[in-house]
Length: 379
Image 1 (tube, rainbow, N blue to C red):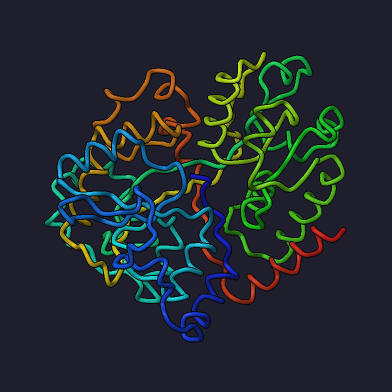
Image 2: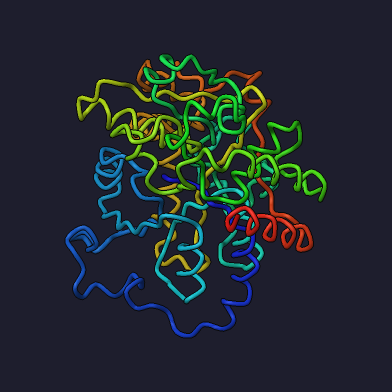
């Protein structure tokens, strides 16, 4: 789950795009199986549920257990960012049962009436979900969404190289301060995401990730521009690989991506490890959620799938596969020891209080942020 480029601009664009688009994309209609791969076809019983999810964001063992339990096939489709997901839905794609958007995109889908209310009486495992992941700002009372997993935007780094350079990793100073960056020039990347990068800068300056004050945003812009000459790239897609092979030593990105980079480095026999640090100033928390499409054709199986995916074993399998945090209170006994002891995956209560979720800016402030982002990219 490379998770969550929450682009406010697209959410506005989406509302106009829905009205402007024509017929559904037949390739995405559940009833159209002609030419489908074996993975995409329903089970011999004819029962299937269509799951629209981030790539590599569910364990194979979880899929196998669910299919055995429900005597059905889980047909999966994937998106790499929310823009892609929203574009498909705006183009009229149908046939999806369960989808996995992040926080403020749930709010967008609710506003556009693209999802249906959740009947919580059909979810017997809902009482296992940690209270801190329920009743969140984007869906009060969980009327339309059920939490799935979460990630934190933080700093990933080559542990051996950073120790050799004697650099601190407990602060956003590592990506913003020239005195530190001069040791990393050309070996550090930051996310190619306006909101995520501004959030890191705002936190370092002592502001909220959702601060929209013009003076504060310009201060964040100036901080970013001061650091930009030392960065190798704005990178939201390949930093896992670049860390894994040693091309970069520090990356601003998602906690589950840093976990994956470390796993890949170990598998490749690299002479270094990839570690993560959650800056003391705070970080962005992204909670992914399951929602039901407004025209879900397999509603009973959709509820069975959601309930299955929030149980303690399924949530633990997700954490063990991706390094994402578990939303289930009872899952720890199934989670590998090194993962559950990783504070970047399972922050303690004090650290959790320093995490903030991104919210959409009002239109005026969104225009300002877009203009400042353009200035950053062209200079």
